Image 1 (spheres, helix red, strand yellow):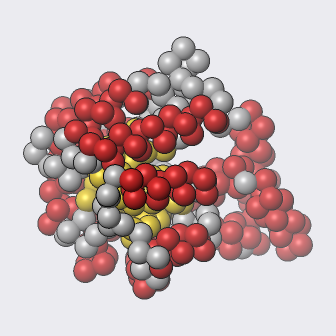
Image 2 (cartoon, rainbow, N blue to C red):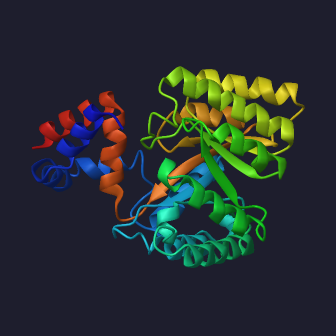
Length: 302
């Protein structure tokens, strides 16, 4: 995240602005466009609406605790609340939420349990990638659990140079691979700098997954990359249900529906949980126009 975005997020989270936003209801109003709610019951309402529109969902829990230990249990509970709606859903989880940094063996056990629970409900799990420093540990975690749970997906960010090499071995196993540009800071020595370089690397990774028979999950809102993905699928005879697009809840919703309306698999990344305000400020900081609307609404209601 840029220095400007960080400063903006810090300002929005300041006690004065936060208290005013919560007291006026502005925060909840804006959050409803980006967050599915504070708990699984509220998330179910959003899932029902998205599924009626033909969209798939990826649930991501927003924990309040620093160690994130509550996340696996919260995701399992969400499956129970969703009941039949859990079929086809994806659970997205960070390695830190599994305790990977402190106890790799325990993290693997938690991830296996989560995969068991998901498979029983007809859902899948995708492991996120939290920056370059945890890259090796995350790969080891994924490989160890994937050996017993073949549906376990892995996220590979294209802004880390080695992802192009790793995607070759992962896709050759027919794995579910989420491809994104990446949002965590990457040291200059091992990362790509310009957005153009990152996008070109993402396309190369996507082409490799499709050529090798893996299941590509393209996480982007970029119209050019979406069009390229469609062309690559056509060239490699990958059917419309042989890969998918993934986008954040509240970002380009009409495009998400358009893709599913013309036959593609379109999945909405749907965060929910008690830390919704912190997530909201992150999204607002990333979208200046929305941030100004948020602050203007706050001023109107004071």
